Length: 117
Image (cartoon, rainbow, N blue to C red):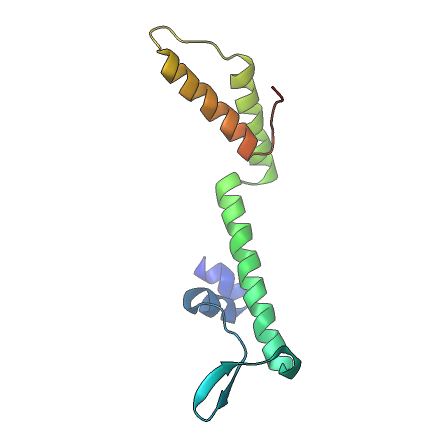
């Protein structure tokens, strides 16, 4: 991940590790947030990098959690198959069956597929 972020823009990794940087100004030794009407080109570049870092992190988390579109469709297909063929297993309690059914439904819902009652 370090190399990927640094290849996009070396400062992205620095922002992710140290947190976003906001434009500031110092008055009599005290640091204050800079008013937006005083931003310069460097301030806007810094804010753009903050946004770019957030975007890359969201994208990486989405791919990690949900997978690519192809993986997502495969997961949906597998869960739909489980849903359509859902039956109570031998020696399974009603509570276990309900938990298994709820897991299938919630997984489908998290992937954007839901069934009306």
